Image 1: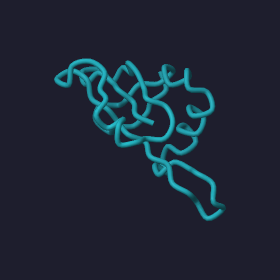
Image 2: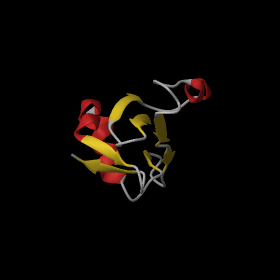
Image 3: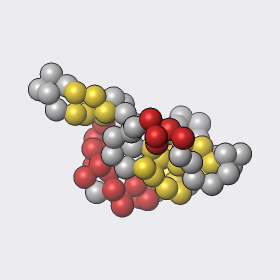
Image 4: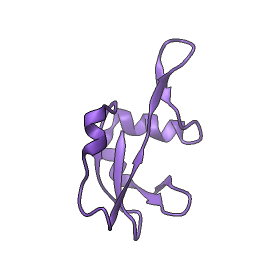
Amino acid sequence: MIIFYQKSDGKIIGTIEGRIHNLHMNMWIGNKEEIDRLIFNWEKNEQDKYEPVNKEQKEIIIAIDKNPISIYDYKIDTNSLKLVKL
């Protein structure tokens, strides 16, 4: 998943859902001077199931994956680059 957010306040303005492919790395929303992005990768675990690489926010990322529209209930903390509930 790729999350695009405003650099000034962390407001999420859009996403690319699902697994990331090389083509997605060239995609952008808005002006790169004002918008940044975070990439959340997934990997196979010992049980051969995919889980977020970001273990610290694993539960949040899984919840968003199950209900993608809920991403807009969050913003990005521009200092820590973590998802923060609004």
